[in-house]
Image (cartoon, rainbow, N blue to C red; front, side, top):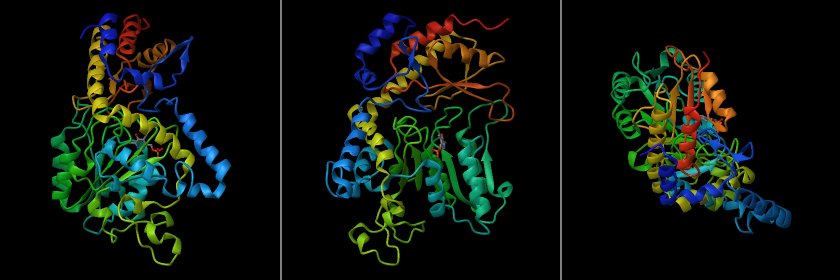
Length: 423
Ligand SMILES: *Cc1c(COP(=O)(O)O)cnc(C)c1O
């Protein structure tokens, strides 16, 4: 690797995914596209999204209620157009996934199935400093079942002076609390530090303890290689608007392992759209679920929040998840290299086990540096310290492989090397 424009441009020329940059709209800064490093927060808009939305507006306009059965994508079967594409991204069978609702809503729906505490087994083990919605969802679930969050929620935190969690500490916590644990619930990629958790070992340890294992993949779906089925995870949910580029507040997806999905006795909150498809419209009393994750659907498909997701998934299909992951590793390594060359004072706290994101622990001038980047057309994101012993904030940078070029990273390095901290 070299911190030179020549090297970066050559790398882009050899990159088979470079062409995808043209498939996206970039916000402009002084007449030029920004260097967009916040695809982990809100992915950019694919240019083809508008045409996909227009097709559904036309179907509605021209067909009215018949759009449920006619047109290019009949709404009646709408979730099926997503299954195979999203299954490839999360490493599942197409029956194990479905696209529905929003992420936090889905977490509650999945907790209804997989957090069923008893007097002796009521604990949830999770990462300390989890994304707020996860903390609140878990806390409210525990209270809803009549337990006390301070007894029933076990948070695993990094050791003093460290920023990432050690895998062995997670496993040790599961072993320690195993007999009382109902659910082990982690993110796939920690939103603050960018750490990728070892979901396979966490699942194995949870099962050995007699607990379920579930994952919030908001920062993992479309970012890292996932193998939910083979890892034997019980459930997972993710959003589509971060790495999956499907628009603000976009629809969520869930995974339910087939061993639960094919069991009609798996408890769940039900709605008419999860009912056995072949007889749904007999509209009889008594819920019979459709096999698979589809049996967790409550409502009929929200077509206009789902269609941007399909526009983006078609790009993922075209690019291929393995190619994206391969480029992700290279471009994140290049970012790490360029940071060290151009701003050696900055400290990356993201561990080796990582996806697209690098989190940079700042000093007292952190906010000043963040503002400097923004003023120079580099879009990053600022996070206040999240763990009690963290003194300064963090700047997160995610060079997502679908639309970030090596030259973008070189340009970022040039901007950083001209930075002057206030005296
Ligand atoms: C972004 C994110 C969410 C957001 O939840 P919504 O219901 O989509 O608002 C939840 N959990 C994690 C870990 C996230 O990173």
